[in-house]
Amino acid sequence: MDHEYSIVGDQDSKSRRKAVRLGVVFCQIGGSARKFGKTNKNSPYLPYVKRHFPKFLTLLVCTLGFSLTYAQSVVQPKQLDYSTMGILYQKEKVFEIRPHTNGGAISMQFGKIKTFYKTNFHQFDIGYIKHPKEFRQSVTFNSSNPFARTSNSFTYGKQNNFMVLRGGVGKKVYLSEKAKRKGVAAGVSYEVGPSIGLLVPYYLKLSRLEENGFQDYVSTERYSESNKDVFLDNSKIIGPASFFHGFGHLTAMPGLHGRLGGHFSVGAFDKYVKAFEMGVMVDAYFEPVPIMIVENNSPVFINAYLSFQIGKRQ
Image (tube, rainbow, N blue to C red; front, side):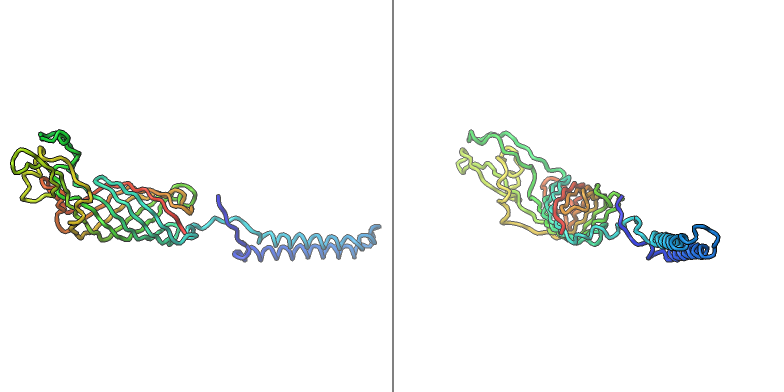
């Protein structure tokens, strides 16, 4: 068990006064012994006793008495107060990877360590959210081009990719007694704040016929009402275009987000942060997010997440 040391005599004046009185009593006993040496004149050793023994006895008893007095105020073990521990470090920077049930995110946390048990932080992250019913597939179709008869993997019925920029404030609070030592500190972490959803048009490479009706060509297109029949025709889909192809046509959607989870930090006194979290996160917008064409779109996304964090305290 870890200890710190303190002067009990400074805190317990009552015990100290008792010890002083005890020393005085011993001194009085020594003085009585000296007096006895002076009055016992019949002893054949009186000259020697008179010359040496009372002095030695007085010195011995007084030394013993004041030694006991000092012994009452020597250092004694006292249990550490851990409530202020952890503030050896005042700040922390943490990089986080957070996969969740319908996507993922990466983020940076900038924390201020208030006490060992509590850290306030600001967080900024960028993430990706999928529709719960979207899945990738590939199909075989008829084409005059022998090198384009099996499509690349694509998501059928999708019209937009959905990126999310989040910013928020949060708090980590440790709860377990093991937080006091070098073990795993268990606690709770929560964060809330605004977010901006970015709709990125989903482009497909479609097989279209030339005007003569005999030769086909590849056309890269996003969904619209005018190309709906071709965009949703499996026999015409060659595969998806580059993910970045739609970045020139972004649409922003304001929203809110929040999360709550169990936080587990390994080596809470260490200079380097090593932690993970498990919990639930919510992203909410003011209108349905148009990710899919043929499925219902919702304004709210609720996901379970698992977070891995590394960083540094200073």
